[in-house]
Length: 353
Image (cartoon, rainbow, N blue to C red):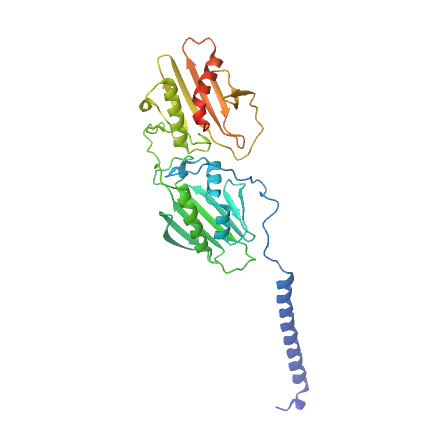
């Protein structure tokens, strides 16, 4: 082709070539700029910590059997976070970790680029992406992952029971998310399954199954159960709390355990003799600590009397949870003294002494 005969065409081709060259240069500069100056994945743990609305993890007794499904919500979060040592968390998630109970009441574990939420649920939530059945820690489970492989979810069935609304949560939900800027290529599905294989056996060690509910009123089969050394009734699953309360009331009143009425909500219904009767209930820990007045002392613990034959005793210094005891004696001359003496008698095992 004779370019001399087509000067305009020659100039056009040169312009196109120059523009293409600068377009390539510009694209390369954009890539370099984005790589150097664009959004970068974090390289350190979040600070401040705990996060907004979150709180530090407490040490609690780990549940056994199927009792993890009937733990109070705050206790469940603490138990799941402390089920394995921090060194094990770090090994499973590939870096330094931080733990908290977050604003939603979940056990929240983070590295610089990973975030894991663990919490009980009463049914498998809706998920998108592929799912498959697996076995985790000896339990049936379902794995799910989004198409982008930046989120992996594991649902583990830890109790075979008909759910009691607001009381029993027979599944554990593990949600693992990677920061979108990390682009690490990690296998989040395998990682979340490994986490489940470590945590689930720790909170389902051999122990009692959840009991059947024997009446519309939520009664449980009676059972003699002592307090956990160092903890007593604190941070117990609701059935364990009810059994402990009924055990101590029955002993104090010399009533057979078979005549007690433990309840699914962590209470012991009326235990009665001809001369007296008593009831007791467990008040689980709250997520937000609040200033409360405890002007009295019973069994060496902060307490408050209600003026009507009842007393509430705070169980621990690191959380708001308590036991309420009501006691009445026929022909009493000093009702407050009666309930205090009775509480002093039944409380030591409930305090883990």
